Image (cartoon, rainbow, N blue to C red; front, side, top):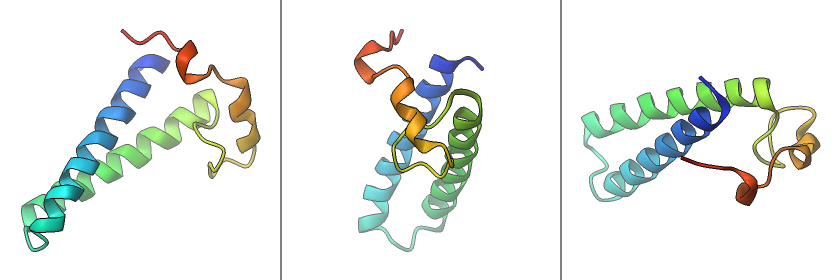
Length: 82
């Protein structure tokens, strides 16, 4: 998966997790929604880690020991999303 595709997938997973989180605020006992949230979270964490290993940190608070390298990556307005 190339860089922009990975970023798109990370953003899509984050959006899905936020949406499920909002749903779970009003339906906290929905076991199916909880399972979906946990599945998406696990996939998001895996992809986030893979992205950082390949391209460097996404945020300044990264778990990556060289998290200050994030300044070397393109700024959000420099990305060309398709």
